[in-house]
Image (cartoon, rainbow, N blue to C red; front, side):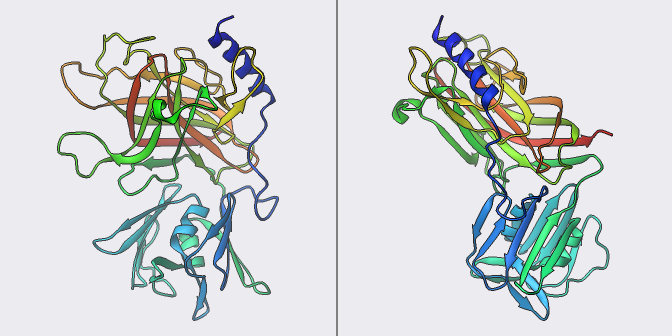
Length: 373
């Protein structure tokens, strides 16, 4: 049996035993939707992923609970965009948008008309503070005030209709993260050259268009590089029709020859949705193999689909006559159930048969989720 065959058999066995990697929620064991909890005067907030350190504590302003906008948005799985020129904060969640201005009580947005906040947006210790309940209402979230403990708890409402998320990376990573699998646990970083970062896409005269950049040298037959994002606020254990469309930037011309395979056609782009957070997990006890990392989802191997991820394209550029990075549009559809917390994860990655250096950028990601029944 070849090394690749041994790994494939071991991966199937390990995935069959893999359970959810999520720990219990930091507060409210029955809490199945994106939530965040603030305590007045405390430098710690708590969301479904754990404790958040704050530079300045939430406070009461004329009877209004003021909380930091960044922790608020992350807890609700909302996108926050800061515009330094006009000092505005835009919050996007589930098709709703709200725009706030520092030093003002005015607000604009998707469903907002002639609305004023009960307190002005302010900056303290480098953090923007917003009126918790008023902004939560505009983003279709519930707010609970516990008077005895002086806590304010904000929880997203479940979605009943098709929701769409649009991600570009000009301001931040928007909660996307990166990881690597199909490589030894004790790999040498100096020869694998692994890197995940938000960076300007390597295009001529580009000064504004950022993407998520993945880099890796395949030294282990089939290096898998991926980036993923959690989407919360869904109905728990509910079936969704899911789709993702995105642009992948590649600089590999088609028809080339490389070690193990072509640098374009033998690097397969895969996409999928899963209910458990995608991660590289350690796998031991494979005959003749040292411990190595595998993905905790079924991605298949190189040109083959898995149960969770499907091949949606490859790294060959659209036009061989053009040098440098070019965008390729790709898409994927699936039907699956959300987890008990009302979450799904979208994952995009490259499964490499080319034993060389691969670099790609991800941008303009659109995710749509439609509940069934």
